[in-house]
Image (cartoon, rainbow, N blue to C red; front, side, top):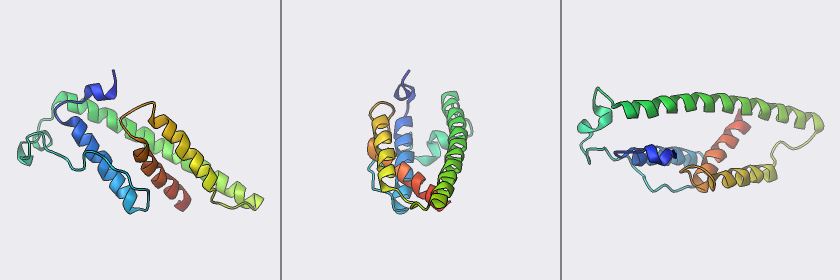
Amino acid sequence: MQVTDAFTNGEAERLGARIADGAAHAVAAGAPQATCPAAAPVPASGGDVAADVDALDEVPEDIRRHRARIDELDAQIARLLNERCAHSHAIRSLKRREGLGLFDARREEQIYERVGAEAGTEGPLAFEHLRAIYATILRVMRES
């Protein structure tokens, strides 16, 4: 089953809005601009926020399942980002010891190219969205 097969009742639009919001934060932080077709969340009710699924006390099971999986993925992403940061710090120390410059624009472009290749093979995120996310990741790694 593809991820997009699981989206119903406006879930894809809400995901798109979350992606757009994340991209907006990345752009505000200096990342390259990315566009996303769904720029704002649209309540399932067509505009009545009080009638939206998220406003109800009971959330349907299929939404809970997706959210539980997202929570698991977020935990994995956080662990992987911390592991990546540890490697980044190790490289920074090695570069200082060797008297090398800390910033390597060529390496960053290689990362963007590799991520871009992945964008063409899996998932709903386009290259420009992944590039915006990775621009933020790389900036944070440099600042940490």
